[in-house]
Length: 175
Ligand SMILES: *[C@@H]1O[C@H](CO)[C@@H](O)[C@H](O)[C@H]1NC(C)=O
Ligand SMILES: *[C@@H]1O[C@H](CO)[C@@H](O)[C@H](O)[C@H]1NC(C)=O
Ligand SMILES: *[C@@H]1O[C@H](CO)[C@@H](O)[C@H](O)[C@H]1NC(C)=O
Image (cartoon, rainbow, N blue to C red; front, side, top):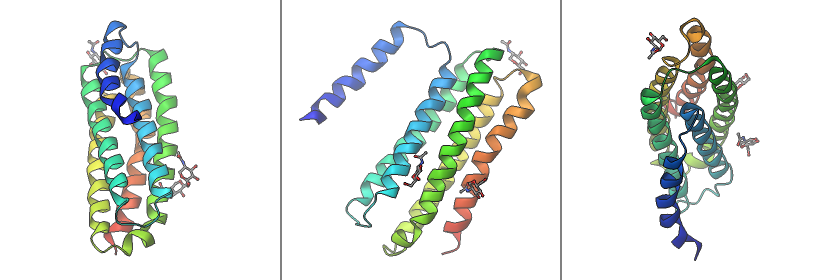
């Protein structure tokens, strides 16, 4: 029953968004990526190891990838961040980095469950690589909008996210 409302909502949401310009679209993009990351974390953590429900992980992972790519487009279009906006973006980035760390830790812990289904590990590996690449593009697009004298610090904040991906990729590359 509830599923019927989803297409309607997805039509209405952009209309609502269009009526009031977002004061910090980069922050909104990071928050969307964070909630998609948490959703993937929950999906993987609660996965019962069944091949049929694996689709939920694939769907959630694709949703996260799309959110990161949308974030890059948003950041490319966005105006330079003010100092106040930069601080909000930095706070959200620190929290995203924690979420990414925990989610990749969950994905690494779930490897024994994935190992049982032969073809799955390469798919997880591919997803991690696609998400790492997308997240590098996103970070670069965001850092470019940070005040010039804070760009090195901003770059440093995003490095932790990249390191988490590398850690997960290393685990899935040796199977
Ligand atoms: C990710 O899942 C783990 C295991 O359920 C949980 O401990 C952690 O708090 C979760 N983190 C996030 C950001 O959802
Ligand atoms: C945005 O900031 C960059 C430095 O980070 C600067 O080179 C560029 O000129 C700025 N753009 C505008 C429109 O102010
Ligand atoms: C998560 O953070 C901890 C503490 O900094 C670190 O030891 C661990 O390697 C990180 N794991 C991932 C997957 O990022």
